[in-house]
Length: 410
Image 1 (tube, rainbow, N blue to C red):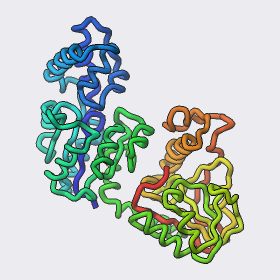
Image 2: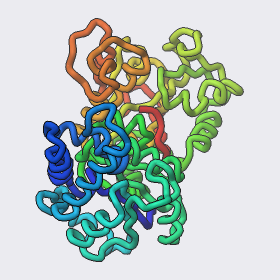
Image 3: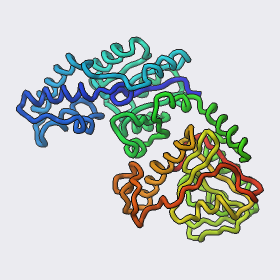
């Protein structure tokens, strides 16, 4: 269970974009410069107001001119920071429920400290235990200094804290501070930026944060659903515990591994190979379908008990359907979603594009950084078959989903 949450501000709690754009353009107008669009300002935010203003000004603007423009920005913004700013849908309700449950909440922003405190007080009253913005003499995010100070003030162990934000900077801040990073999909940056920054999990709605506050409850729901469908399940807090268990269960048997970043991160080939006859085409062994045991992973797993995988050649999903007497599929916490529809969406719009990037495919999703599926017809596309497992395949003696309380793979 988590007992505290540190939030980013812009793009996470509040949609501040229009007021930021107005302040930027007020400063530009004083200099007879053309205004910036909302989309441009959205791309500029995230690294402090000086960088915002620097990016909005013409390239080559001197430091002195940037400072003057920044002063005008600050003056305008201080008087208009609440004109069009609004909380994102579900945020006020989320914050009230967190406080009702005794969860400590804090804010860490690269926005000026005075503006951060003013905005939080205006929209949310005294709900936050700590609010920090950019302060003189203290490095801004992604440096972890302010984040670590908040941790000390909250007096909560780091393994009980979630860090929630909408940008790569936020995810990097969490990683630098040793916190679990949750990226929000309603903010200023897209999925690929959050994942590249190191997000442990992504959420589409504020209420989904509770699954990460109480992971044991989500795991219990998933296991119950899987077992009601006939799967056996196992759960481990860490990948080290999980791979030790798999080594024990496969000892002395022939084992075929499916192509899987998850298994690679677990050093499955090396560890299982110590006491088993392991084949893995990623290591040049070729694909083996007549092994006693098949071990792979999933692209997504619903809380209703369905496992989803997408494949290009078919060998990876084939092993989940036919051949081995025993099948083990590993799933990290990052791949758990509430519904089958969301599992399919995750596999299609997150896992497959990220794997296309890894494989350096010349597909629309890969050349755009793996942001989403473009439903292309490229000869290089890797999403050629989607398999949904509703129950163990007939003929298998054991079909087990191994859940891990860490982020693994894509």
